[in-house]
Length: 225
Ligand code: BJW
Image (tube, rainbow, N blue to C red):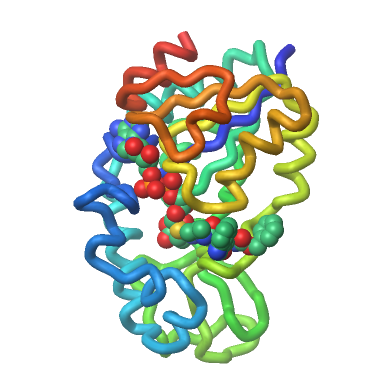
């Protein structure tokens, strides 16, 4: 039974109608990263940051898993391999497709986090700066999203899985954001085979043993089936 760690990024959800970050019509074209995806930006203008994530939450709720999400869920359900999907995405399309063993390393739109006491609870459809934490009552509600300069979630578990893996597959990510962009090097260092599935060669494509390029809804099912 091969142990496979799969990293996914915005490209896996692109064909579900969810915009990526770094395309010419991507999310960062309309917003400065420092304004909407840093703790400093949130401290400066929490209403803007909540508006950005409220819109993204609505877009994710309206989207459906595509053939790539479904193929990964099928691969896990078939039971021939031990699979861990590590997603940088904050949408819930992997879980809605049926993937069980999943880590949201950059957090999730479905979560609210109290910046004062660290309490977490399910996010309402619309969040606002004056919303208070149900535990400490502090008006310090933020989306449960990992912003630049913050530590991504469950890193020890991810690195342990990478060290123990037989194969690392990176799907739909530009390889610009660390620590995820370093997983291919971590895997190679441990002698793990590496495969990239992406629309085009990513920033780190030369580090992969093999790369297959095309839309995720085609290359992922073709790899799985
Ligand atoms: C398709 C497709 C189709 C399209 N089919 N494919 C200098 C050097 C090194 C590091 C740093 C540095 N300065 C700062 C850092 C650290 C920083 C960082 O990496 N910055 C870089 C910009 C340089 N990282 C951090 O701060 C992270 N924390 C951290 O490092 O903590 C310290 C630490 C120390 C030691 C160990 C561990 C940690 C936190 C990063 C948080 C990232 N957050 C964001 C936003 C929040 C979430 C959200 O709002 O959604 O997460 S940034 C944004 O980028 C988002 C994404 O998850 C992430 C990755 O983007 P992704 O998924 O790759 O999307 P795109 O758009 O870039 O690419 C899409 C790809 O799909 C493209 O290649 C397309 O071709 C492809 N594609 N259509 C297949 N149909």
